Length: 113
Length: 113
Image (cartoon, rainbow over all chains, first blue to last red; front, side, top):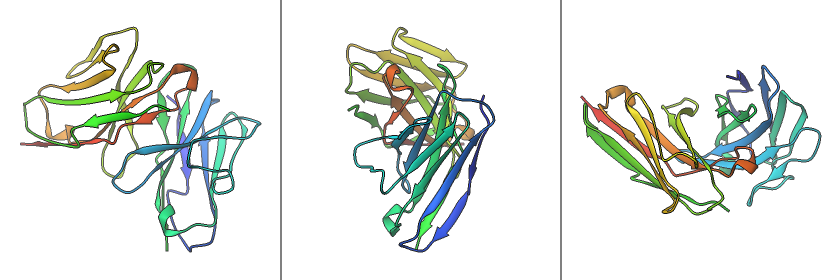
C-alpha cells in the first residue's frame, strides 16, 4: 500500500490568509484526490488532482478558493485561500494505485480564527 | 451526480451481537462500493469493498452484500468487539471516475462490553 505523508498535520490560521497543504506519496500513483471533512461530518470530494493539468473540481468548489497543483505522479498541494472560520475542517488527500483501493493521508486539521 | 444515503446514523450494540449498516445509492453507473472505518482523530481505513459483479463478500467477521437492482448495499459485522467502535462510512463510485468516492454520512457504532 502507498505511504502518504501529508503536511502540516494541523494549523491555526488567521482569517483572510491562505494555507498550502502538501501530499507526498512514496510511489507513483494513478489518481490523487482532495477531500474535506467538516467537524463530525462525512467526507466531501473537493477535486481530482490531475498530473500536469488543471484539477477537476466538484460542484460547490472553485479553483480560486482551492487551487490545486500536481506537478508529478507522487506530489500534490491544496491551497485554502482567503480563509474564513467556515473553512475550519480536516482536509485529506487520497491516492489510488492502478485499480486498487483508495488510501488516505492522515489529514490536516485546519482551524481559522 | 451520485447520492449515497446511509442508515442508521448511530448504532449501539452489546459486545458479541451483530451490527448492520445499510446504504443506498442513486447512480446506476456506480460499480465499486467500499466501506471505511474511521476511529477518532485518525484517517479512514478501508475494511472491505465489493464490486458490482459480486453479490456478497466476506472477510472474517465482516461481510458486505450488494443488491444492484435495488441499489443498496449493507455492512454486516458479527461477534462485535469494543474495538469495532468507530464511525463507518459507505461510499460508491463508477469505475471510470478513478475512485473519486461519494460517501454516505456515516454511522457511529458503539459496542458496549
